[in-house]
Length: 395
Image 1 (spheres, helix red, strand yellow):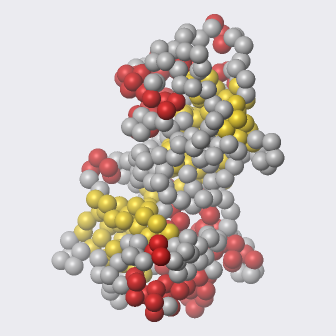
Image 2 (image 1 turned 45 degrees about the vertical axis):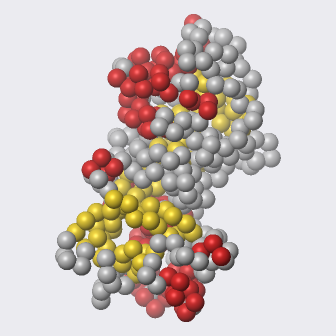
Image 3 (image 1 turned 60 degrees about the vertical axis):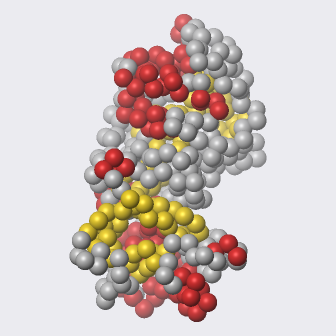
């Protein structure tokens, strides 16, 4: 996230699947900017009215990196008439803080419509935007879509190590760019050279190495840090860099060795508690690690998620991570997923990406922060359909 790589929560458990102070928007009742050379240019600030009943000839299909966009009627979008669009408008306003070229002309209208009724917002969208069904480009694999979820962990930490808090979280070391890949996760704990470069780069200390792994997989999190004077403050750790090693799933490692059938986060934790002497072996099977930067967390920022790869704060329930070679950042997307964990038909904004988010019909759904969000993120893995909503040409 936040101009970074970020993994889906259930990547912990060996699949591509992966609330705190702000609740996740309720489920619907019904079940950086990449180059996109063949997309149409942005329309003028005022778009032409939509022909009656959306009956005008459809525009041609478009190619966008790994995806092909097939134009469709608005009536194809399941649940479009029922979504509470105003809940997505705040996420859209965030995207308009850093709009890509196709959206600059429309963002003034998006801002004006922030106080409009859902009916007015819906009518404007049908005037200004053309929906396209997202499909894989030829030779880009299956059309089956996959929806997973991710979240922002909230963890207890200490500013200094103690008998209980022995797991450090690091800022990027000064020599990080001098060696690629940098030291592996195992070498960071065993190599005198690596440990010398990490000395003094500790941000805070956790009690559980699995919590550190979760934080690195999610790419950011909130820490309630106990300072040396006993005071407690909440900060955000944001992604800063990696050691440039490939990511390897500890869940897959356990499964391949016949250690675990329940490849879920609770299952992994239970295995670790039963096999403390093998925890390092499991953790070292994933050579990749993440370095962080500490950010203050004022009240306004605490009401939103971390910054995604687009560079804007994520909105729980309305921001998704996508393959940036298929869907440009800042694009409004209609998302439909039948469940079984969370039936969804809603407007979302493509504002983030992640190394496990690969393919045309692929999205990671930001569900917020804290334990409840983490539980949902760890379980969500379900079918998906996507439609991009793109500015109409010729305006």
